[in-house]
Length: 395
Image 1 (cartoon, helix red, strand yellow):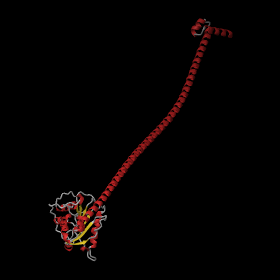
Image 2 (cartoon, rainbow, N blue to C red; image 1 turned 90 degrees about the vertical axis):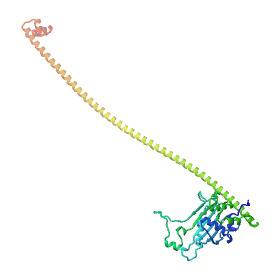
Image 3 (spheres, helix red, strand yellow; image 1 turned 90 degrees about the horizontal axis):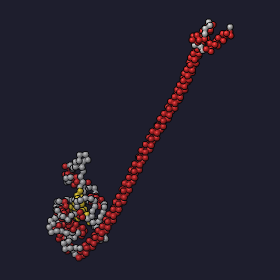
């Protein structure tokens, strides 16, 4: 809805109003606040890229100007989300350098290019809403900044190397918190809300307040502007739907990633458990092998002990046999000795008996009585009688 306080959106004004030289003061005010110095527009170089059809898919607006210092300034306003938007910024700067370089001119005639991107969607990552970038060369080893020589400064009319290369501004409109802390914030507030507060003091906004009021538009312009806002809303809805779909796909992808990670962790856990089981099995096999080796060693020792026992038994048997042999020999010797003793004793008894008989015979011959002969020879009475009878038979 268009209110009495509202102003024409800056992107619409850039397409329809700001291209007039009479309105350069609005752009000059914005550029002066952004650059921090007074900027004068020398000429509008191109209207390239500004489609007039309301059915256009891209609401890009390029303003290509040359300022009084001979620098090329590209102001690009982008409503539709593009992931490769930064590449397009780079391409636009490169294209401006080549297109506005006269053929055959020395390289020092390359114009300084400044790009200003006013973007109504989130791209990249960052907390701020206003970024600027320039090219510098830092020493890899000494970490010093590469500088121009005094001769180059005089010839190029440049003070630093970064003055030669393109300079870039990125304004992330949706990231702005609606609190204007300085004059460039007042411009960004206008970009976001299409409203210029009475207390704003930034250069160019006073003129914009008067020339960009919606109430000052003709019925035809107001109708076109309403249709333009409707087209923006439609594109915003499409972008929101695409963003939602991308977010859903992102969530699904993240979910799939988490499930894959979970499966990976479970697989790793299973692999770890399998590895642990393998190690335990190997350990068990090693222990079993060790037990088998110890059992084999015990069997060998038992076999050795058995062999030694058998050897000991054989030696004991041999010792027993030898002992028995000795015992037999000793027994034989004892028996022989005993026989010898008995024989000797027998012989002695026979000799004594013979002696006794001889004495008895003598005593019988001498006519002695049996009693005397018994006392002298210890022979029995019958033995003496046998001797008497035998002697009588002999006589």
